[in-house]
Length: 421
Image 1 (spheres, rainbow, N blue to C red):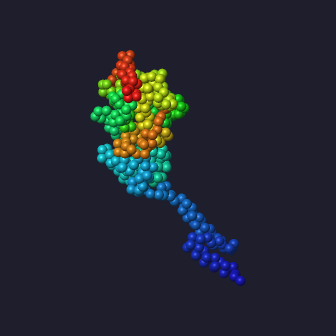
Image 2: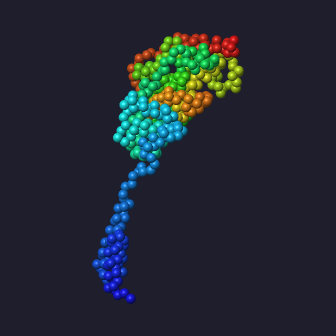
């Protein structure tokens, strides 16, 4: 049987061993006050070491491939992955990166390459993902993601001044000549004009001004489209309640808007929301227009009805372009809370990217899906900036009568020769 002194010696030796192992020594002797204090000190030191371990900051992004590694894995892996993640083929993605690097001298930063910057932007606009989710994918902070999204957006916006323009073609466009319903009746047509509603982020005090007839907070975007489904003019910034006519007249009358006027004798197709004036051909009013209004192509009530049917089939190209744009870039249906000018830049950047993809891969799966669609919905558009007027829009009765005569000159022979007579 051990004595008290033997127990003290045992505890002392145990305390020394425990101190080396960061363990705990509990004093069993109530009489030895120094041993109790020593044990308490050791215990407090051990607790402090345990708490300090819990306060060590762990890296937030420590899973998966780093950004450049992920980009290389996508571009060199299965081509379907690039289509799914970046909404374009590998060929188009590399073309966009080379163009931004060579034409706009978009150099890589210390940590992020041009390919990674474009990949960040494409993932952001293609899937409408939050910046934290995109940052987790590329292993970057939200600040880094926001900075590169803004950089690529500004570069594409500047590039749009060159890419979004009327395509000069020799003779009549093949889309017209290859369809007997279009040629030779619409050989002077250069494209179609219409507006579309794109989601907007507006402060609560302005929400009613941006709320359109469908109850959505949206902005009006006026666009021109050629028969390659490429945008030739984009005008952003108007509130959702603005009427098409106001947007149309403002786009045409201000120099800085740089509207691409067609040459003499040529025209754009527009819907019934636009005025009937020179160079802009609307359908006949108070007549059936969309395909959905008819059960069969043979049930026509006259040349006006037949013209509206052909007009709708041809002008439908811009509806397909809108569908392609929104299906490819989901951010246009879920606009982030940017300020108004930045929202407009984002729309222009998406249209620029759309044109670049259309140039490189004109038959990708998104475009094929859009070509298979038929639309009967109509949308609207807009912007409200001041500027110096450069061209007076001829809204006179003479202008309207001139376009009506040009329309009749197409519609009546078209009706008479509809069966190849």
